[in-house]
Image (cartoon, rainbow, N blue to C red; front, top):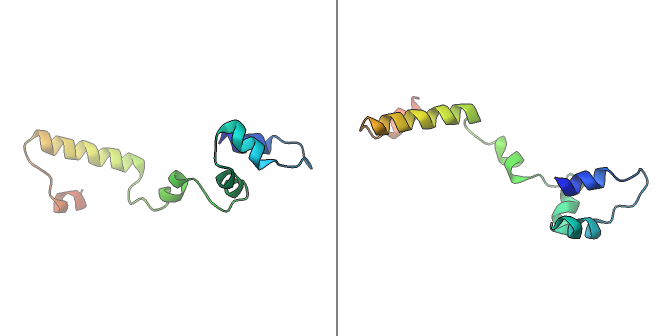
Length: 83
């Protein structure tokens, strides 16, 4: 993120030196280049669209599982699916 911000902070028309910026921020040059050019995206962004549950729903499900476990009732797949 910081390396991408440094690229965006360059003046219009100023040449991007990916190698120099990658070294300064200790990132892989090829990854920086692909991210800046929009070829690849960070993993958390990529997988966010593939999640079955919203983060809030995931937290509620975890609390439900913890509650069942405290009550001595291990949750079954069916119980989780019907949550």
